[in-house]
Length: 469
Image 1 (cartoon, rainbow, N blue to C red):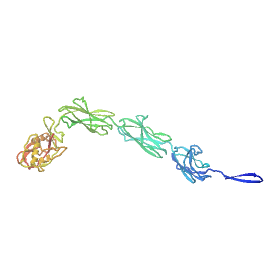
Image 2: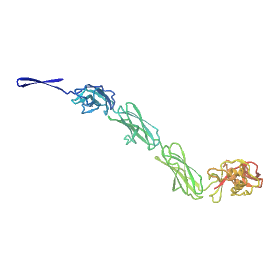
Image 3: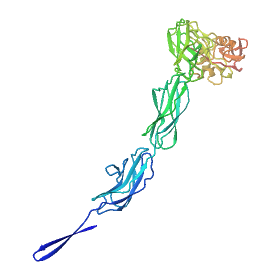
Image 4: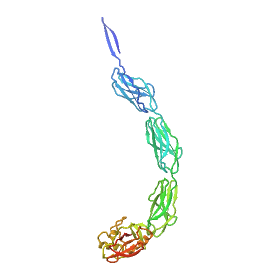
């Protein structure tokens, strides 16, 4: 709109008319777009510049407030300059809250505003439901729940403790949720006390408020351990393996053995497998060392968990080797007077084979302790494979490579100390010794009768290797 300023100036005898014309500056005219895509913390609006006014538009957008007639002094978007239609993304809103909004456009003359609109963001306090515990054990459990964020980011935790006062908190997985749908959440608990009652509930928090689920409770599994002291094995003059079995009753259980020369014990040895857990019985062991030869020792198993200590029965053993023990690569069938050294044989036969060459130099030893030299004599004279002594000499078994064919007396001890006590898996048949009788025959032992007889070296008989320790 233009204004006409008419001035009359008298100059002498003439009238002069001066027309002074000026243009008034006008702010832009803008229209507010409807608010759409309303969420918990965001929404979309915008506007259209209807008339840019008398000057170029330098800024446009939408502004909003929780009060009516928002201005650019409140929250706003900046959609740049120029005319046209624009889309504005409102963010940082509070859930479940009513807002007034309108488009704006600014030029040199000022700011024009569009029609005011009102909208309410989505959202309310989250919902949360406590559910039954799962994976319940003696010291662990999984807490469960269902939560709905109700359009707003929500943090999920569980409270738990020995009473409904709780006292402990654990973050759920997932610990943060959003959207408007139910989400299953959980939390794994560890280091619980066995056989104990625990209370728990789910807790959900968003910007609007806090929701707690109902209190629920569970009782952890578990009981004091059950134990049994078992027979000691691998006894030697100075060491022994102490054995026992433990049922941990679903709780972490520390296992030891008490050992001594009386039932007062005095020495504690930790079980190799300690600590143990679970719901099935497991066998455990410990090595006792620095024992006194030929001395009787007492021992018992001890198991401790959070619900108690259990002691096994007292058992005794004597610190020495025993005939039939599986030690040093095989079964003990002979001990010398010291009780610290002797002979062992393999737990099964090697081969059925002939004895070897005729007229071997040496190999005449029959007594205990001569089998090794006999074997060396035979191997030197009979380098070919397929013979009894060679099968023993070449044997590598259980980490040992010093096996030999026993002498006739060593073979007899094997029969009387093992075979006749149903040990060693022998057959009631002929076994070769390394003792040569003459150029064409050698000594065998018929285990069925424990009798030493000679046989032709070309005959086939059973072979059992031995070694000294």
